[in-house]
Image (cartoon, rainbow, N blue to C red):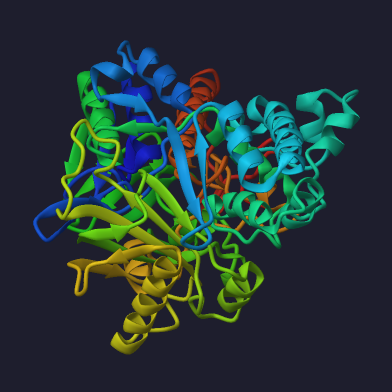
Length: 515
């Protein structure tokens, strides 16, 4: 079988399928693995340019174990004692800790005893939502709302269905827990983990806060080291990788995916094809007319956020950085109103991953360190070209936000700025939407592209598909693709294939296809 794309989802599928004796070929247009989990060179330093927060370690421990290995034999992983440092200005700072009770104490000191009690109630509610949806949805195949979900969690557990709060916005429900608007803003930021606005995201997504509270981990070498480890794991079981090789066309025989045509014209036959790409690339015809019929486009209005991302090698002064840092805007509603209007925020919140912090050796004062600096932006990279003047304005706005919070970057710091245009080039047909479909509205999580498509033998994986955005979710999508492939191939061997006119198959009532 053939996998298009060596992102985390494709790599997980490759390792799992190869470990089960399947012949696997992975085609990747880039020169190395990882997809979004990549590094770029800035001022001679390799800076992580993709995801930086590693959670749900058990997903990868289970994956490696199924392949007869241990995660820690391939990468060095240690727990982050400080999950994140937050700042609103030079005087207002709050750290979250690996120990939830330490976080609760810090909140009490920061905002008072009532705020600490609100955090305790919020933490319990987020944990309950996660408990309800972890196995039934996040780790299971895509389902519809509400009856199929009720069937999975138990038809008698109507209270659980209500408890996930799909019809209320995250911002509204956070107001029930936190009178202090700083804390409401802090927990609202978890909606941006899936590229969405807290004013439009259902409160269900509060479960992301629980996931992070259960453990944030640091990988030596960054997320690209995890991608390289998955390649080695897959190769141990015979998987083949062809980097610097682009797929041009997915082809079919008698209505079933049968192989991939490369841009060189070479054909690779396959009894199954997994597309580890944004479904919008398929829907737009990027892999040919057959793949375009296999999935549906979610449209421009439902795109997730994009970003302005500075990959920097810079000296800093002022507030001490942790690995993960958030510097908040004084007007959160205005920030997302700017994005809805099609422009980067005038006064943005800023996330910084200081990639050399919490390392084995501390940073010497006055030395440059590797920074990934992120400001949310609209996914308009296919309709708007960011000028040098606009880039300079965004850089100035970012620096003003940091300086308000007590952090200074050196003048003229070495950096590469990635705009929505760069992300559109990297993720074609998305406008630069980094997280696929936005999680806006009660039904959004049920409308993501599922593992199966309308074309038998063609499957989807990656952070833009079910179960959602993020490194562990992408790995879970690869596991779901593996399970679907093996299930369908086993079914084929027990039955006789039937040719159908028109080169398309009929969709079964149980097909996990795009809505």
